[in-house]
Structures are given as structure tokens and as C-alpha cells.
Length: 336
Ligand code: GRG
Image (tube, rainbow, N blue to C red; front, side, top):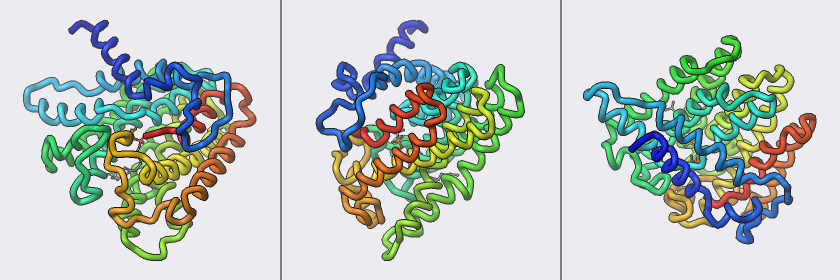
């Protein structure tokens, strides 16, 4: 297969990852949406499709087996990395960079690193020792195909490659800014990020009396922190000032929490087929969720409130924030 046909295939498959029926409609026009979103002239579906092609291509090129001994581990890493997914974190990174007039090229290595870290967290989350799931992104989970041992190592390798990738491939940016991004990525995976959030999540499973405050802590660290770094990294690489980065972080933390509230809602309202992962899992594992604490309508109202707070943080940027604001709406409007 030559490069042109490979890229065409990638574009077709990435287009298919967004609901095809939505591509011909104005963004957020679906009647079955969880939320009524404000109409906007900005066509988010077109924007997402335009970003997804280059993101898919950059992801596909990011892992190459150069010798027979690395064939299996690279195959396992690529299997999960290229298994689909909405690519929200890379898109947020590119959109934030663009808000400060930065090019996609500057932010693409960070965008790839974010998706590598996210994919690592999904592989590990699905392991028997964690959520023990056999379906992810509509496909068998990594350990089902490659075994638990290789799946753990594929996650570990994706994590370390993420840092190598952003440090090695970011071009045309002050190295101090690149280092800032590397540090933030590190924080987002550690005790004050994915790992810490996941541990608290596991500890609260099946436990009575988990409060809204506990839930916020879990979701801030398990989910919102990586979205925060996605937006902050894009802003930093695009040339934002520290104050501008701080405003972006307020936006991102709030959409990150909204993302998880929407995830909790979808777990009870969507089908396994639509989600590409097992629906109703929170109930089965006796997890405390936003719908459980606030009711379905209360959870929807909370998601909308968080998106409103997020958008308010970007008001100083006016029209330049149109893409990020539209992504914020999409995050609580999505079907999977
Ligand atoms: C191994 C250091 C280390 C950390 C990993 C397993 C783990 C610790 C954390 C779990 C984090 C996790 C899976 C959080 C859930 C976040 C979430 C809502 C994921 C779904 O994201 P989407 O909807 O998925 O963007 P797609 O498939 O579209 O990319």
C-alpha cells in the first residue's frame, strides 16, 4: 500500500469514528443528545475531521518496530493506540495551540504523547487486576489478545515512549516550554494524576458514604488532569503567557470533570454497542457515580454547569476560543 492510499484509509476510518449521520448535520443537532447545546456557526464535526486525519497519521507513525525482537511489543502497543477512540486529548492540545496562533506541527508531538498516555491508562484500566474488561473501543482489550503480561508491558512502553516522543520531536519551540510540557505530563500520570485517581477510585469501589467531594477528587485526578495538561500543553507550545495558560487550565479542569460526569451518565443511558465498552459497569462494580449521588437530571445539570464555568474562563479570548468552546459542548453532548 502506498502512502497516499494509506492516508486515505486513515481518513476514512477516522471519519467513521464520528457518527456518520452527524457529519451532514450541523454540530449538536441530534435529537437524542443528552443536552440541548447552543447553536453555533462553527462546524465542530468538520473541525474534528480535519484534525483527526493528521492525528491518526502521526499516531500510526509514532511506533515502528525496527528489529524482529520488538515486533510483538510494538504490535501490542499499536493495536490499542490505533483501535479508534475520539482523540479528544490530542484535538484539545491542537486547538489550544491554535488559539495562540501556534501551528499543528508544534503541538503534534505533545498531542501524540497525550494519546499514548491515555491509551496506556485504558490498557491498564481494563486489566483483570483493575476493571477486568474484555471490550474497549469496540474491540477485544489488549490483554485478551496479547495476554496480561504483554498488555502490562505495552502500557509501560507507551508511557515511556510518550515522554521520548514529545522531547525528541517537538520542533520550533523554546526548549524551556518543551520541558514545562514534559513536567506537566509527568505530574498528570503520578500520584496527583491518573495513578492517584485510580487508587482512590479502587478504594471507593463498593464502599458506602462516598461523598461528592470524594468523587470530585477521583475524577479530577483520574480524568480531568490529563485534559488539563492537553489544553495547557497546547497553549504553552503555542506561546501563551503564564496567565493565559492558567485561564486555559481552569477551562480544561472544568471540561475534564464534565467529561467524567457525561461518562457516568452514558454508562447508564447508552448501549455497549454505542459505547464500544461494557455499559452498566458502574452499577455492576458498585461504584459511586454522579447519577447515583445527584440523579440523572442532577448529573446533567452539573455537567452543563461545569461547561458554563469552563467557557467563562475563556471569555478573554473571544472568538479565538470558538473551537475549544465547541469541544466543551461536544464533551457533554457525545454518544460514546
Ligand atoms: C499505570 C501510572 C499508571 C497509571 C494508570 C489505570 C489508571 C492508572 C488510570 C485509569 C484512568 C482512566 C481509564 C480514566 C477514565 C478516563 C476516561 C473517561 C476514559 C475514556 O476516555 P475517552 O472517552 O475514550 O476519551 P476514547 O476511547 O474515545 O479515547
